[in-house]
Image (tube, rainbow, N blue to C red; front, side):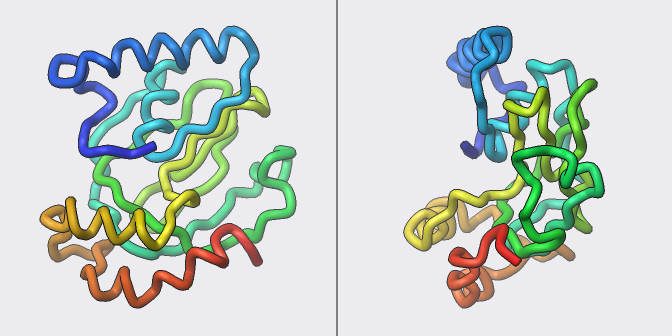
Length: 169
């Protein structure tokens, strides 16, 4: 899942090194993996892709568009081609070599990938709950600033009902 740390913060958070090793072993052992936000960034680094600061922070409810290749995967086949998702990130990843680019948004070209039909990385948050989003606002609200892809805490809270429609037509 997400967090205030980055995928390259091993010196500050030594557990990140162990987490990457765990992800690497899971991939080698053909396990199914879902990484969301920081989790997707960790998977991307394990698969050799770059993780870096995105051109803009993306915090709030913004549209995500599936790529044409998304329909070729069993995981994303049948999901609406465009949906509104919750975002809270300032970093992004390159699509790992051998992975399928699944989704993008106006603020972030790489919103999702699938690797070997069993490893999924999502930059956006489909797991969010009203309480979880409220906790983010309460504890990390200082990250909300002015910007083209930043909503105010009030805008985020006023659209909380979008949770029930995530990734549906």
